[in-house]
Length: 173
Image (cartoon, rainbow, N blue to C red):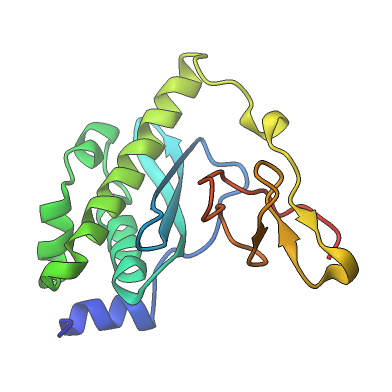
């Protein structure tokens, strides 16, 4: 059973969407369960001024993503880095044992976004957009194929289930 807090964050997620001009982006996933979380942060005066998420996953994963954004917004980067998976699960009123990995993903995505921001600021991160390959459309637009392993995959899947590669969805269909 999910707590009322989990259900509220699932039904009414906060801070959903991308920040196109994000200062830091964190993406984590668990290909085994299919959960993928992306966290986008905007930093001002060493604080998280804005934070958004896009999650592909179960209700618990969506609730965790929503909660992590609420917990991190307005915090300093150091404070946000101290948010743990246990903190997220507790803030949600607990999670079933088989969904605790979702709280790990939420904290990891937040920490990855902060690390990405710090690496960008230090000049350590190249522009990854230039290295992405386009997602290939199938004949007549009815299927899509991974540009890395050429296996058929679901339209708009954030990663290939076969090789694990992140997939860009900038194509014509």
